Length: 320
Ligand SMILES: [Zn+2]
Image (cartoon, rainbow, N blue to C red):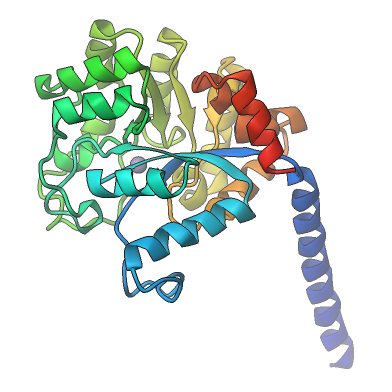
């Protein structure tokens, strides 16, 4: 009996120390490593959220403050994220690390999109926000959850603007999420997350700077096809890499590298509060070289976003 207990104790000690060692290794690796998070969601603050509801009496500000802390703790120097116009403006105003923009289209039935005054933002206003550098992002697209075809003509003027100002667009390229509120999304059609449906759009606007979100999901082959066809199309592996079994998604990430597209993989977190978790997911892909990991954390996105030398220098200074 005593023997068994000490065995269990030893096993316990082994796992806790090895996990501490692993955490130390990541922390060491991340020293002075700037990270670009290409997938966050801008929303109102939720007063029942105990992570941040004590930070500020204004719950919207409290959430922004809490995000600021998450960014500071995880070396996030820039974050791409979309949401309601109101909050996209506010977030970038209070923390310049946010490259914000409108969710496309926003959903008047969905709490996360509140306030969604009109599904498509006012074109004139958006033009001026892009032109003045206040907004620097478009997305995440919600074609699948809204049941709207990505090549629907209503979006043409938005693609035109995005192409003109070289605005990065986050395209939701998966069938999920699988836990959904049907009252908020009665027209859900997962087929509209298929990136092949973007081909007619790209034919018309061949310089659109799109990245495919949730790469290793249902449409991973279609993602590869679109990326091979257009050099400026990048991707990320959020949500799928966090929720699906590793044996399912990891070979698909390997395939991305085998196809010579690994230098277009970027880091993202998607789910609020999961930045560290997603950093670990990348770090724990053991066949990636250190250089490849650093490229995912920062360099690939820097290239995708055409960051200048001085911006890159500034980002490295921010995490010294
Ligand atoms: Zn998504």
